Every structure is written in structure tokens, then in C-alpha cells.
Image (cartoon, rainbow, N blue to C red; front, side, top):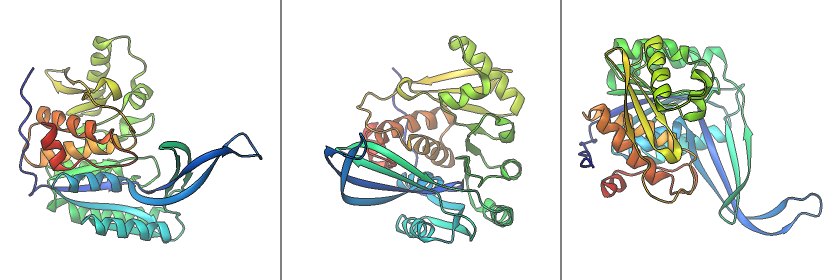
Length: 317
């Protein structure tokens, strides 16, 4: 077994996070009976909690790992948008949240009873084109001051100009990491690294028969899109890095960390945040992957969208 990678000094790392933000709301309560109106549990809500979600959770993970994060996104001119701005200020994140009066800030409401998620309710729509253009202009201004870029695509419409953002980032010599969504990865052409999960990758390359077939399919995708690497997150199977080398995909596999899995929501946010922070701090890609794997192993042991702190990652090493 290879020794654990060294944890770099992350204090000077600057990460620009762009993408879809959301407000994660949790209603915690006790379940003691079934409703007489329908065969569903009745939850007596005892406390509520709000946490940043989506790209906001990515930025939160960056700061937890010691880096400085700037968040660029779109919210509605509503109470949820104001709550997100307050939460970002509490986390010491420089957030530029463009307001769209016609937009409702995305909210994911989770009802938790006896420490189990019973229901999730989503509220969402798409931002206006004019607001997205303003966000692109600010992206151009913010780019020179960062060491790495994360484009966090949750399919909510906030990354309509992602192709231009990738081109600008690469032209500026910045690593551009993308958390992808949907069946068409061509919109991410030219990115440094994609971080799909198994279901997302299957939508694009189809089902693979075995590891050799998976490697061949990822190699084709890397060449077609001009990517440097692809990190496949595989839940209980860990994660596998496919990098473009000699015209083929060379694989580096990291097994999942041996710990109890409590909640996988937000684990992808932690992975891409850790990758960006470590790369921005001077780590090479294999070391960044191994450190991101440690961070993911910490986060899945927590309830809801959570972070892995620098101290926790250091302890896991």
C-alpha cells in the first residue's frame, strides 16, 4: 500500500466557484403515528435548519479546506436568496449573487424523522438571459484573481454560457473543473477535468461490460472532448481517475474509505472542491484525487450537505 499523500498548504489557494446555488432546508421531527388521511407518517417538526446547497456548498467546502473561495451565481429577489447571502457571509465566502426578479431561488426541503429522510420537496425555475450575461461579464473580471475554477452544473439553467467560461478559463491558464449534468457532455469540451458519477457517465457513454470496456469508453470521451482527465465517482466502489496519456485512458483507482455511510448528499460537492483546492495549492492530480477521496469518506458519515475540514482530512491521513 502506498503512503498517504502529503497535505499541501492551502492557505494561499484561491478558487472561483460558478454554478447553480440552492438553499437546503431541513425540518427535523419525531414520528409517532400514521396519518388518518393517508398511509403516510405524521412528523411533528421540532427544529429547522438551513444550509447552502449546490455550488454554494462547493464554495463552503473550499473554505473548510483552508482556501479562499469566490462564488458567482444567480438567485431570486426573495427570502431564500437573502438567506443564502447571509449563509455565505457567515462562511467567509466572497459571494456575488446576481438577483433575478423573475426567478425563485431553488429550495430543497427535506423532512427528517428519526434521523431518516422521509420526503424532499423542490422549488425551482430558470434565470433570465440578461442576468446570465451579467454573470459572464463578472466571470471575466474575477478570473485573473483565482488559481482554479469550478463550474458546478446542477441543470438549473445558471451555466448557459459554460462553453465560453471553459474557453476563457483555459486561455487564462487556469485548471477548469466541471461537475457535469445531463446526457450531452459536449458542452464541457476543453475542460481540464470532469467529475461524473456512475449514473451520469452511463447516460453519456452507455453501460460498460467490465473495467477494460470502461477504460476504452472513457478514453474515447477524453479524446472527443479534449479533456485532460475524468474522475468517475463510484459510491461504495471509491473513485477512478482516467487521464489522457499516449492517446489512451490510464486509470488510477482509489477504493472507498472504510467507514459507515450515513448520507451521500453533497459528497460530489466535497470531491470537486477538494480537487480544486489541492490543485490550486500545488498538488499533482493523483495526490489531489487521493486527498479528495479522504474528504469524501468524511462527508458521507454526516447528515445532509456537509463539509470536510482541513483538520478532519489531516486526521484521516
